[in-house]
Structures are given as structure tokens and as C-alpha cells.
Image (cartoon, rainbow, N blue to C red; front, side, top):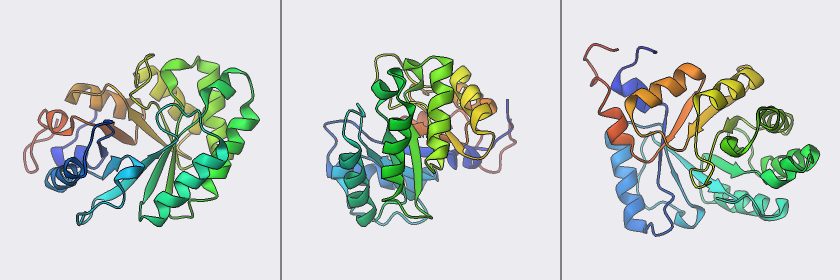
Length: 227
């Protein structure tokens, strides 16, 4: 396992709130907790924008085409454009995995490219491929499409698909496929410190967590010896 302090682990984390009954007050509490915990970002739903709290050094991420991915490319692009105008730093879009399952990888690449066109650098685009619902060949194809379309990250999961969330195997395969050219975000079902570290060891460069405090509570505080 990697050796990492609490503060170092926190910097991997997109502190996430995507519940359908989330309120603006919940988002404010999320942001305040993120600042307290020292996470890299918060990740929220697009209708929660703009976030009415000073985030300080914490970045702001938003989902797009979430959670099903069964939106047209034009709708996803418009959603991303609106979110960028509202001040987000990063967009996590869901691909249409049905297109991938049907073997239409070009269409997957085209929809990612349409969203990328509305997210100018240095804004970050993460592509959610729903890895638990894919076989290995499909995971590789999705990652290659994301890279070809100009994405910055590939991401395992929405956390809402019945097939499940992140797995060490999927993260390893995604990391091997993108070869360090893109980041890899592990998200969905990461609820404890050991699992978080296992994902990082497998190649994850970002973690999507809703139970961030519980995960970090398994890490040493800043100044303590790392493990």
C-alpha cells in the first residue's frame, strides 16, 4: 500500500454529494466540510450551481448527463456549457454505454468531443465509463475513445448503476490503457481507508467519495507518521 498522510490522501478526493434530495443547505455544508478536510474538490449536481459559499482552494466539479448517460450529445454539451458559465473547474460526464455495447465507439468518442468543445482548458473533463457494466475490451475501448476525444480523466462509475462501482481490476486496466496520459478517477463504493489506498495503488489519481470523513479517519493526521 502507498504511504500517505491524511492531508495527502485528502488531496485525491472529490468530496461528492449527488443525492436526488440534496438541498442548497446540504451543498453549503459539503463545501464547508471539504475546506475543513482539505479535499481537492467538491462534486455536485448542475442544478446546485452556482455554489453560494467561498470554496477557498477547493475546486468545484459538476456531473453531466448524470446518472444514465442516455442524453443526446447536444444536451450533454449544453449542460457542460451552462456549468462552465456558472464557474465550475471540472465536469464529470457520463457516456452512453449503450452505444459502447452496440460497438459504436465512434459515437461515444463524438459525444465526448462535443462536451470537450464546451470545456475550454484549463477546465478538466472526466469521462465516466461505468466500468462495472463493461467487459475488459469495452473498458479499453471507452478509455481510448475518451483519450482520442481530448478528455483529461477516465472515471469508473456514477455510483448509481446496479452493476456496482469501482474495482481494483477496472482501475488497473484503465490506468494501463491511458498510460499516465490521462488521470484515472475511482468512484463508487469506496467507503474505507484500505479500499481508498488500494485504488490509488492500482493507479487511481483521484477518488470520488461521499463518506470522505470516514475514509480519512483511517489515515494519520498531518504530522503523524504515515503508513
